[in-house]
Image (tube, rainbow, N blue to C red; front, side, top):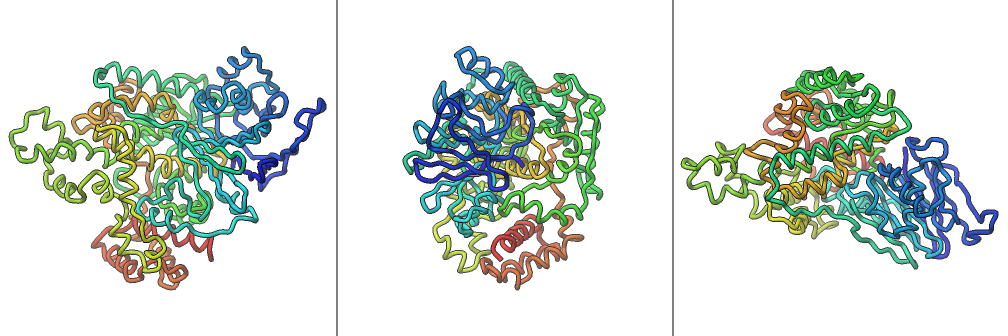
Length: 619
């Protein structure tokens, strides 16, 4: 694992310590600098860059500023050259960590805006008696904080905070309420009372015993309707290529995830063109024959052949999922019922490389998921539905790919009066569904919670009227950091593999935010402008194939091989351990699922992961 961990005491004393590693002590140097207070530091980080001299913590020349951080700074070479020109002296050969202390000296808190990377940073300024904590723009790397008995604790993992003797382990029912809609705990909460996450692009300043939190970066949508598709596609290609180039900087071997879709295939293709070594690629395949999954293997192999990669496949069975139940939960320390496939393919990757590039983030930038595909049709349908038979082509395009499904669009409109209400119908449980699931005890513990209102707040703050970009912004702020990037980071770090997503270079994110939604999903075609950007780079068959997610076929397994585990975990005596559900509601879900009248697979998996988490941490 790699990460940061620490706690602060009173303003005149700060201690940053790694709970599970030896403490590295540093007092005054031979010249007498920084004679008080002493500071204890330690951390554990994957050795990716500057293997010999890049250990942390890292100090500036006089020892007044020190930093520990988790992640990678991709533009550290350019920043180092700039700082050396300005007179800064470096001890290491090319440590990206050491760049941070000098960059802070030069620019103060604004140093964050100059970073291109993924990071959770803890920086102590002894002269100002001031601690700065910061998380990267997209939220690729996690950072948790908690204030207990006058102390501020922080760590990359919840388990580090739970290990501290002053932390009392209590569930956060407010956060857990939202888990049953999202499949994950949404920031800024964690599943534990008193422990929170920094949001993506957020920093926290601890000074004079006070904690102040603020956004240092936000993705702002400002559509440029004058840009043409050819120029937009060329710019995307240029930015993506440079992003891949930057992320291929490492002093260890690296590879790439390859699912057979547009996103990962584009990254692999660019890596093969840029790098001087044969790329190692990794795919997940299934022992059983599941719908659409055979195609993933076919397309992944096609791309691997075209670019002559050293290709590896992990064949997954239901035994893998059942056997890894506790290991996956341990990686999160929270209930999580989203995708866990990363855990298994990364198990294979760890045997070959320490760093792997992925295609994560492209869906949330360019539009792919069901809420994205529905955004434009639902926006235009109310004014067009009474004259569907006579619509000209340009208006027909606004309703694609649902032009011939007016009943479905009408039904979706009936789910709520606004975007938030309609979006809630696509989550695992809406608020009404949770009220039917929860016991009186749980409802009394969170009487005023509303996931719909939480989503409405996100939509209201989007800053754009473009229907697709509003939907994309919602997922960029919620699904991407809290679920997608969470499972990528936690489950890859469980095998000591670092994952780098080129699509989440801030330059590419900011450019994508200038493109109108009509360019991202055009005539019902998902990720239209991205596909045009990589046309000629990857096979047309990959570009034009239907979207298939990188997911587990858990529904099928729960009906068959994993049914005994589900029935064991969700038995009435096990649920009585916490008493948060109505027994009759869970029984109804199980009965309907196993009679095959309603597919409740995702809900059963959600309940199973929660139950196992509760028993692990509270029983």
